[in-house]
Amino acid sequence: MMSVARFINIGAGAIMAVGAYTTYLLTSISQLGFLATAGLVFLTSSVIGLVFYLGVNKMGLFDQPEHTIEDLSVILSYGFYLFITGGLSLLFGARYTSVNVKLELPLSLSFIKETELIILIFSVILASALHLIFISNNNLGLKSKAIMQNIQSSIAIGINTKRIFAIVFVLSFGVLGLSGCLYVLLYPLNPYFGLYYTVLGFVAAGVSGVGNLLYSFIIASVISILYSFLGLLIPLGVAIAISYILMLLILVVKPEGLKRGFR
Image (cartoon, rainbow, N blue to C red):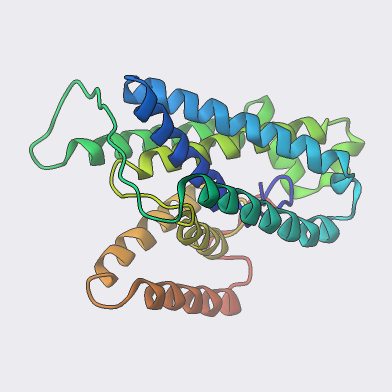
């Protein structure tokens, strides 16, 4: 969203929470397996993404200059985050809630837990799918790259940028919802858990270079592993602060990030 639509989504954690609580509701009222639950979570989150896009587009957000879009998107997405997390707190409370998900994995490995294997498989599939959709040289990928490089030129050559934006919002919200669905396989949830992962996402995007999906994925994985080790030694809040300081130091030396994207 930040690379293609210039929309800085501070509310990403709220959609993760929606996906997590949708998983909680579906597993509480039905006997659906994990794959069916994940599919419904993706669909629900994608519909929210489409409605959100139609709302901000109706406001004329994407008719504004790029810097205005970026500034207003922070305000709009933060308001969206407060609205969603506040609503979830009213409905479910702020306490931590565990979710029992029915897994359907046909194989098991001795050196990795079933839940961790499912998360790994989904992560690889999602990262590969997003790379094929937005980065590879297919029709949508080429249009996305063109918009990343210069949105005005893209409009001039006839690319329907708002249609691309709609696709980006729908898929982004869907993937965020799936992230929340995967989260509950390992951890109890509360409405605000997604904020930590929003921070992680901005650090990964900033360090790797906006518009570079592969490097963002690799750096996010490295940061997650470092957090896991640092969490044994120092409080999580301190680890997040250290990551921000490192990101700022890297951006001072290389403002475009470690690997320049398509912008």
